[in-house]
Amino acid sequence: MNVIFHVSSGDVHDWKHALSNAQNLLADETVETETVTFVANGDAVHLLVEGTPVRDRVEGLLEDGVRCCVCRNSLQNRDIDSASVVDDVVVVPSGVGELATRQAAGDAYLKVP
Image (cartoon, rainbow, N blue to C red):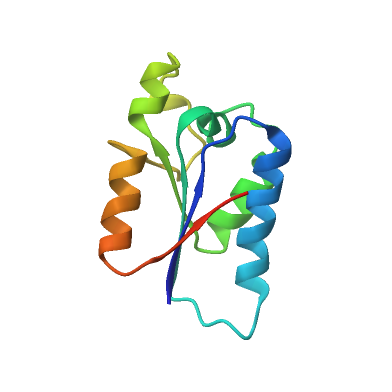
């Protein structure tokens, strides 16, 4: 199964909740996942840029093979340089475009939190 997580909140507690959901899915031996993608748009882009207070958890997901994506439109609307995203995070043209494309391809969509 392919899964895509979507987070748009700017609240750090929501980020932690979303990251925990992704980690819990990966740890659940009863669920067979092929790919897991994590998409941040809106104010959640701060989750995947330098200085994020949850960098270690983001890097842990990346190390576990989770594809983490951040919305270029949201970065630009917040005057954040795309060069400031955490290493190995993919900048996609639009978060909603990535979500729609992945859902059309059959990914299970999870809005978190």
